[in-house]
Image (cartoon, rainbow, N blue to C red; front, side, top):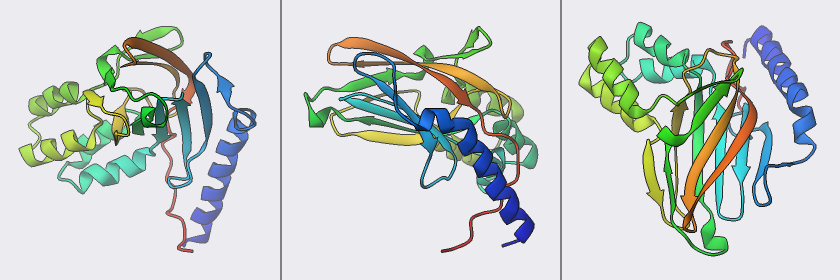
Length: 213
């Protein structure tokens, strides 16, 4: 590995860990049932924010803009179109129905009910449907559109007990932006809503891959 990149990677992760230190010390209670945890995802080596209770868990893991550029360029997007996604605050999203460990119940969500808040102003997530309309206007090739659609987290879904899914969520914010996210889901016959505070979009920096162990 390039020694200069190795030093930069270490410095970046050190800064990330320092900024999250106060949250790493303990889980923060959001309600009587739900907790928020945050730290460095073991696989991605980037910050995550996770909300969970006895029946569900939702983890959001930062993706660097450079990772997103590479991913979609390799799937037929032009550099210009890949850059649009890279600048849109992408997170890897993993949502699980954990109710098989307690009282089994389907889990239902719709991303159009979730709300992003930045400095007091609220907006929605950018969904598969929003992106599809944009790619059609820009004339993106259909195979690339299909690859994009399947890479993105589904807008609406129902999970049975023990089911889960993962994919990319886009928040339509600039790299480095801090925001709060109101998460809404339905389970056990009622609606649930919790807000995750202080999520931050990944900065637009280049980080060399980790050296093989």
